[in-house]
Image (cartoon, rainbow, N blue to C red):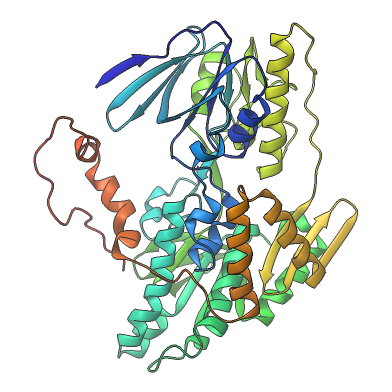
Length: 466
């Protein structure tokens, strides 16, 4: 393990934790500020998370929604990008410690923006993750792509009708925007894209189930949720509400209905789109600052997004808890810009704004080709108009001109035609996540010139799921 300390410069040092919407937009806002910015990211890319389901269902490539952070900031001379996972923050010493592949770096700061985001929550049942991947990273989306397309391939080979039914049953847990969009795209994949591709099976007979313990699809959307429910039914998605998942295994899952009755659904492919858990850094900051941390790991911040007693520390995005703001991209973007503006004001010796005000630009969700719902203030749209609005808004926030062009081309292929340009899948995509978890510390040293431990067996997954 090596330790390096960031050199001390003459200008104020701003450290940003996280390369998501909050962190990236904060860094860009500081482009012309007299500061030195260090952005620390767990990955080398900025992820446009709302379109992950399109990577999972073969519409878009991962590169189109995950451009390299270095490329985005290459013309910003005062910004430095560092790969690493933040493992410690010392508020008194004003240092941030990050590690990557056994290498540790300590970054000193004068101003800190923490935008580490959130991961998938299984509500205390983390064992479900092996059989029901979430939708929070490129790894998740690629694994799901392999599982979804692989299920059809295995069904083509199967001879037992019960096995075919299991392979052609897809269960999405969570009826929020991500779950609705995912279920809708799997249904379209089966009924449009793959309809004529197989000889032994009928892909249109695939069963797509959307589960949620809530009593409504898209609860925050109100009446639009009921319209989304109706449209999902029309494209063949079975919506089962008031249904709580109590167990998940390789062959299916167990569901408890509102009346207490438990039943089993046999399904090879399970997708978890319910619940989020903020980064563990929230608790770490709460322990040091005295700020409250809720059950989802979000830390309560001051009205100006800072921590109590630490005006130099700003927390933005999914990690923060303030006025019940939703965990959406716009909250992170506006929060990141607000924090950056506050830093510029402090450096200039001017007073900062005492309170962050979020401007709600509305919520949207696609259901199927040419159908979506959009809740924009007092305006509510559904159907084709909402779908066009969804396309335009999401295209605006894709980073990079080239990515926008290729995204439009892939949308044309998928929405106007029947094809999907990103159907390639590999075993590495399906099994890589668990293999890396199993390798653990062995992987830390391999391929990096570090200390090598005992040789890892070839089959290190021990995975039961297909």
